[in-house]
Image: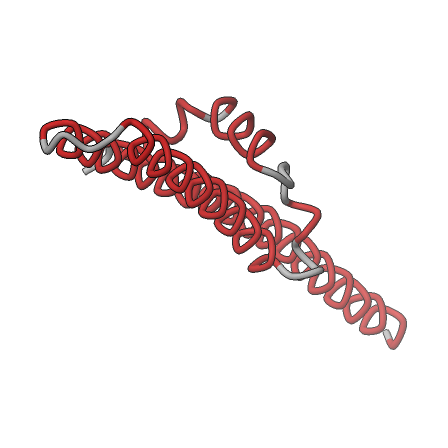
Length: 134
């Protein structure tokens, strides 16, 4: 009789540990999927900001031309714009990477602007679906 109770206790412990293990695995998987979705949304926001940044630059160049600014001034403005654009892209990617910390750094599929845009392009449909949802 005592061995039956011990067997029931062992089955209970085994079931409990198994349940906790599967719960942990499921929660870890969901966390990684959530991180990847967050990465995609963050990259999409950065790209949209760069689009607006580009429209503002073009508007400024048009105003400069309308006000008869010299080609040298327009060229200097465009060079400064390109420097700011590069700095913004670099800082944005660096901040996204730093936010993950060492534990989740393995979930990152990019480490610079080019690989981030490849990651965004690869998951383009997911971003479109996310944006289209109400």
